[in-house]
Image (cartoon, rainbow, N blue to C red; front, side, top):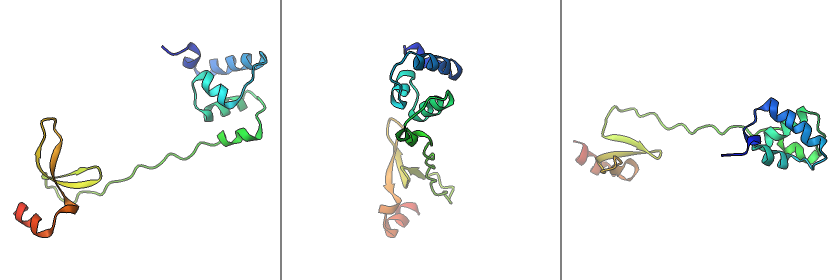
Length: 120
């Protein structure tokens, strides 16, 4: 099980932080994050919330980077159950393995002649 201080909620963590700062220990964004088991952005936010003076170099943790957007996969125009999306590519399903994984031919690897011979 993780240490108790890693399980503290924010109000209790801030009280504990005030006592930690008063003890004279060396407090930085990095040590706070490691000590309380939070990320460095949270550490920066909570240290500034209690009024702890941080150096200018710590300002890199003042703003979280934007959350990357999920890549949208193309909408399947056909309702053909023989085609499935696997890793962002369409596959013509020939069968399934014992574990349930589809196998077959990738759409971008088929020639038009091969596709019409299989599909018709």
